[in-house]
Image (cartoon, rainbow, N blue to C red; front, top):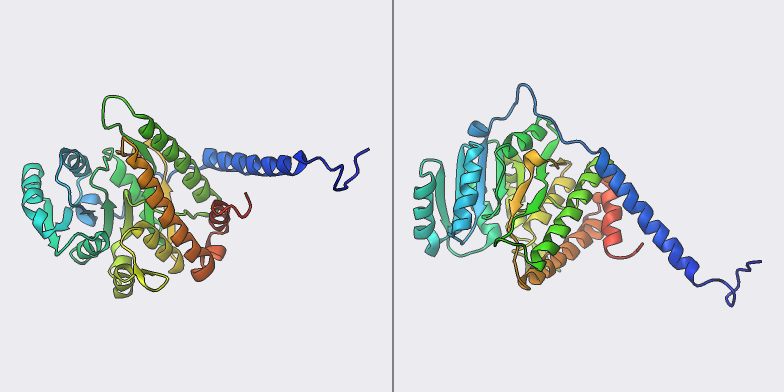
Length: 319
């Protein structure tokens, strides 16, 4: 007979309970991801890329990867692409814009490289209803913009994200790129399941995300975005996508993620040990932002309780 005493209670039982708990939630995530469905294309769309979309690209790079990415964006026929860079990079990036499409690509500058400053400068120079932020190495399928715009048919939706996949830098993936691909696969499962369960998402990835311009042109947003401090004294430059996601939640806007091949972008990752530095930076941003969401702003608990739960799990409170 089993007696629940300190000297006879099997030590493996707590670990079994923890393991069962973890795998139960993993199965719930898989089931939610399997039943998730992307928003279909509307018959009569409210938003058309050639009239309503500006792509903003904060960058200081003018390499061949950027040219390949820019060509993929232009296939979707956006009204305009704004490249925001520092002043000393104006020449190389203007040459790139002239080579690709001088009519639809405009290069603007800020005094020094600062991603949030570059993004806010792009926002101020946007005249369309929808802004799409993109990394300079994000390669889009031709159907990405129509599928992203489909989500904005719901007037409550303020931000839209996409699924992602790794594109190898060389002919073969390195072990670091394989790890990155595994990480993105897990992320695709997590964001589709959380979107299906309670409509929320921990982060609208900065690699490509779309927003209503009216939200981002709000002076309160622009000030907060460029004057974001950790512990009141450390000004933040990274973590822009986390800030944008928190702003959607705290101001009552819904978000959605199009997890489907038609909206799945390709992105390169560091093919060497520097990938670990990227992961460290992402993790640091996640800790800072999620602590704010859970314990300072606290809107996430009522707006998206499942997402709040996943944030708590990330800190290991419930294993």
